[in-house]
Image 1 (cartoon, rainbow over the protein chains, first blue to last red):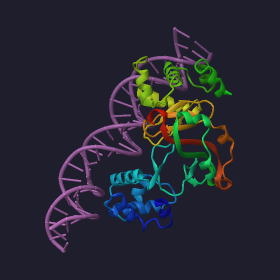
Image 2: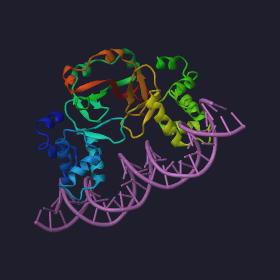
Image 3: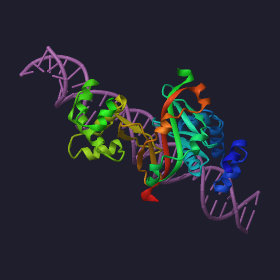
Image 4: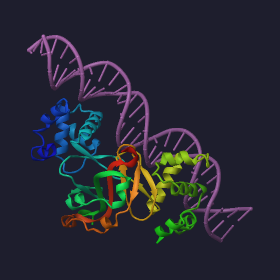
Length: 145
Length: 145
DNA sequence: CACTAAATAAGAATAATTCTTATAAAAGAA
DNA sequence: TTCTTTTATAAGAATTATTCTTATTTAGTG
């Protein structure tokens, strides 16, 4: 799978992936993807832009937004939803969920295959076809406790 | 519990609740709460305002935002997080999760006590104290199928 | 009824994101 | 390679969602 490949060698297969999807490989796209893949936090577009202007001084914030949107539409990255106004992003990898610290707003990934494999309650079946589970668990992280 | 009371008779106990919390009972607050309690969708602040200007022609959008913020801080209502930019709101009731139709963006409540009662995977315990689970399941609703 | 603190309306301000347009640069063809 | 076509970018304007400022109004209390 594409996603699996990304995990083992995120950057080197990136150009390949773009071509498969019909996307041009631009320095901006490479750097934005690289920066996001190298992030262990879940940066906002703004934050990524701040990090990237050092290596690409002319990079516009709009390009970061546009590029993240493109990647997200193709499933290369995910938007992480929080209560906050700014969207957070991450490179796609094995399906996972998020812990969010209510104090410092840090977002932590965790996997829960047991949840992924559990069927929704029976009564939801009549409501439509819902499958993509996204769990957010709020609390206080270790550092803020 | 307060929340339980709300379910059985949402409006009539509302004034009582405000007083307990030290909030003044204003026509705006009553109407905003009433309108939200009467909603079976999960309206945005903007949408609520549109509905309310008919009965309260001078109501400002700012007041809707401010009031929803106040109610939310007190736990009377919840902000529902979606990928979209606008926040959605609902009156608090028994803890529940959300189905979101990717096509029409409709938000549907469902309960899953089994999930609520399940402990998080063991390895999350070292990361902090996380308890409030909020599950969103994406898919296609019955009408859009 | 009068007082005081809190809430509101109105519109300005801010923050996040998207759009417009002219320029630049990938990818493919010659 | 060079040319051509098409897509992507930068810059800044525009839009959207939300919050702030300030003057005015009003709920709660004595």
